[in-house]
Length: 259
Ligand code: HEC
Figure 1: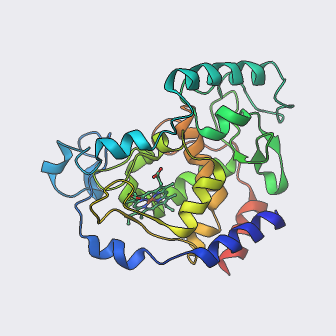
Figure 2: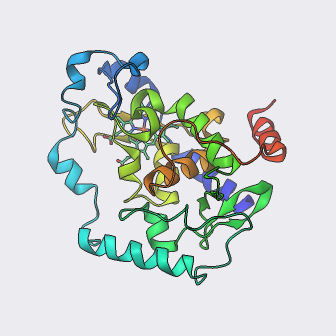
């Protein structure tokens, strides 16, 4: 926990303020994968018809590291899932239903490389065998508190650009796809420092730096965990049901926020 905070603080120093840039970009933001009637946050019906407009093909291709060929990705995922279910990936935390947690063929990078066997860590947070934040899903399909909290924090801080449920918009990429290429540390680094113009090299594609925003920094693991579950295909759209409240973790978040 302490080392992670130090790592995040280090990244904070590197952070550049992309917020102002993003606000001036003035791009119409239309969520993808949205059903009719859900569009309160969206603007402009026209752009909805061509949601990929802001995403050049070259950038989309580049986002998948060449070293992990598409065919190999699927095979590795199957192997990893089987190993985990068989208990080789470490002992799963009590209550985890590995059948309900079986990732789809193109899981998040951490799940592909480390598996998704949840091990109980501090404050009721779950970690994969490599120590990356991960989710726990029980046999009723309910999720651990961090995954649920991550949904809430995603909706409050990321949804306006990245669309409901992480599915992307005409302005910002689909994070359930992108986590297939980003590890937790890649993800945290981008969230802390921002990123510009990978998705639109001609300009105006700005991911703000959140390194000085406690609303995001105090919930980095939760947001990642939720998106990881979405990327792995084990949590559907909308608000997941949580197994139980976690007062300890909620208090830690409030303390981090200065309440
Ligand atoms: C103001 C709009 C906006 C908000 C709010 C926003 N993002 Fe982004 N984000 C973007 C844009 C635009 C990009 C693409 C940047 C580029 O082209 O390099 C992006 C890129 C990213 C990427 C990198 C994806 C990739 O593989 O290139 C991650 C990860 C990410 N955002 C996570 C988040 C998270 C988590 C939140 C909420 C805490 C968030 N974003 C909030 C606009 C936003």
